[in-house]
Image 1: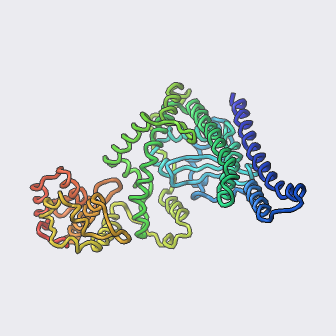
Image 2: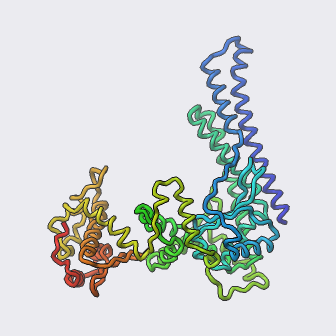
Image 3: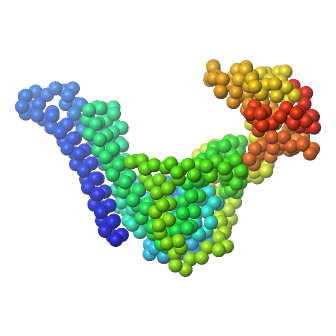
Length: 490
């Protein structure tokens, strides 16, 4: 069954690839024929037309030439000698599905796992490689990771990775032709755009079917239940990791520090606000997800429905006492150091990055950032005190319009309101910190400042006053107890 499916996919891929190269050669030959025809039948050659035809044909033929796949390691290489328990799992899955091990396994900063054939030309001379995301290992249990690995090995099993280089290289050639012809002739470009759209729709349909086939193998090998839960985790947390990286990790890196990446992500997704957003986003995706002709993967709900129809567990598999996959990694701090070094290779700050715990980032990373924003806008806050904030809550736009953003001469009311709320939060945080308050800015959680027994969430407080979720009396009581009630924030 698998061999006949592979044969159909391979046949279609080869036909589509050959079709594109025939199209390119025919168009190029037709263009080159024009100068010859002018000379042969008219006895003269229009130099301008001849140059256009020759150059355009050259552009097309150059786009058809396959490029060497120069593989760049996407992260630190994982070695069996350093992580024996992880490779024991990888070896077990490879043996279960009767597949060769990948030549190389890399750790990547992505909520994903993947396999590919890399190197060589059009797949010839290539080698098997695998990528495992650090956030993926942090969130998936061991049985869920086994299911994900079985799914990825399913792409080897079905021959998908052998088809991949042919499809990707042909797609790249089409893109080169379309982009290069954009500067030459929109008329000559049109057949390549048409073929490219058709090629994408057909090959992406093949990719979506490959995902169903790989899911079926994973469910048969490991079990439908861990596969389904693994799919939910991956889809739910993918967007969360992007937000985590942008909002939490990037400011730390820009300040010259690095914090525990995997542990911080676990804290981020466990924060109540973030966890609620992930749950709602996942529910929406399962309920409303639709197939797009250009998607490489089917909608999550279709994959879950297909998995639900498969046996609940593979024979003999047990999932009790299921630890997180990150426990399979040895010497995680050193591995994260290598990952950051790989990600920031060539960046001037990369050698100077200092380690900092997430508990320390509030004082060492975020307070300086708040001070910078506050000092840029503090003149607009003259006369504003914590005591007067309830009065300003309904007119933050007025306050925001007094502020200035470099490169932007005018703000909408919405932008002015958001700017004022951010600056007021920074001003409160800086004022509390100057009075000796401790600061806690853990991933995904609201900023908390404690002075004595009083805890204030400066950024939340401003927004809660605007929304009416925090009463003026409660706010004034917090300010009085922390000693900032009448302080001029300007």
